[in-house]
Image (cartoon, rainbow, N blue to C red; front, side, top):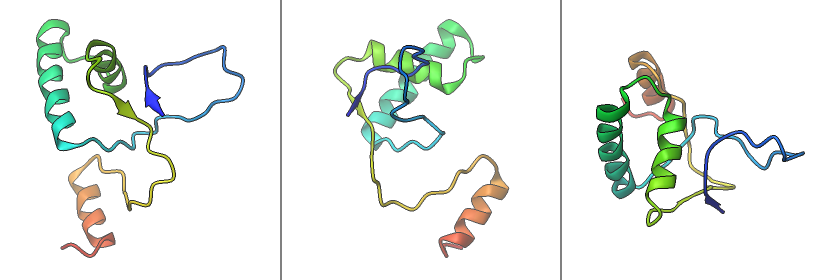
Length: 95
């Protein structure tokens, strides 16, 4: 299923899904997102959260489609700090 926007839709009685900071992008899309973010920060400053910026990327780049990945089988761990990265490496036996 293609993601057409990220935001709150109060008209939906039952949510299909939720972004919970688990994202996987191809290196090609990631490069385009980083370029978009660089330009975005120059115009809007760096005070926005990633959800708003990715939403603007989706709306402004109609040629680049982003999809929901359902029933994935990839191992993952949330990494926000160097300590998190160290613990993740231990979990996946990659020291």
